[in-house]
Length: 380
Image (cartoon, rainbow, N blue to C red; front, side, top):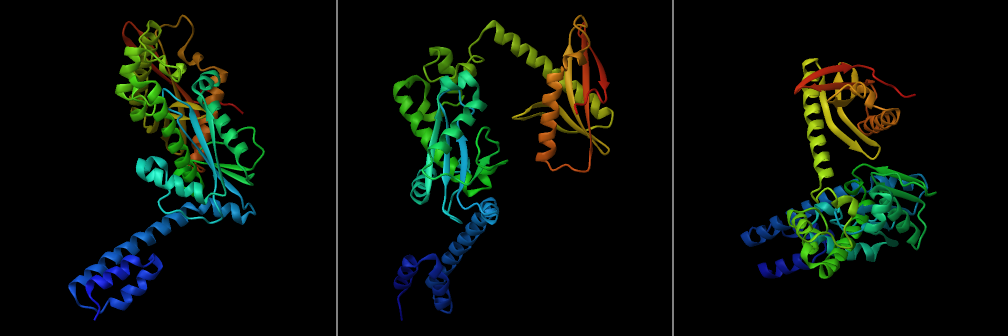
């Protein structure tokens, strides 16, 4: 009879595909040690099968491309839209058809150690991968959204193989001729985008660790340029360095203009809270506050009966320059409508009517006066 250690050695050296056969072979061995081994490896198989199902789900968008005749599919994602310092980095990754890499997921859900391990596997298995980098200076010149698009185009251009289709995380990349699809939360839904998010994250983190050796006082090796308390305190103490985004950090440095902006923001928040209170009294169900997307922002999204309502809140302290609703210009109306359409599409709303309202709040002698205007505007 084989010893328990010999059986354990067989399980240790077996591939995941062979473990089931070993379990069947030794399942009638009543020794407790053998049964413990079987129990341990049954759990391992369950974990493996669960991971395979997750990876199958993450191949959904790629398989849709394959079915349409697109065989070379690139996933693309960015890292670094939000930091106060450093570049925005994008990665484009083309994986082999139906490629599964265990553990690949949204880079934000992985530890630094796991990202490093997967980075090397992705780079080894990929048909092609590339990086696009746009500096903090360029971000200040053209804004972060346009800089992200520029970095994405750079990454696609640098691929050694031209993709037939591009899957992007959330965005539609302007000025490219390759067919593309933006997927909200794509780094957790598409294996190609997830792989790109890992490559971009590992690349940018390594860059910020190198920058930390040049600019030691900001703790870039820890915060990667994001606005941690340590980082913001260093900016106030030492000022900014060459890789800081001036358009991002200006609100941290105390100035009279920033104080005015802060006061105005506080008043705007107060106005929105008052509008929410009055709308609830009138029977509205509040769905969202301060909804944002790449098109713009909507103060309040609500529902009343079978109508979804997009409400802009305007507060003024005087009527000298007109009624508050007059501040909702044609340009502002257009952005609100575009944002509303994005929200409708994102949430797959098909059976509700739509309306654009304005909540007016006028402040006089520390008293607030509220007026609600239904169907305040509509753009064809």
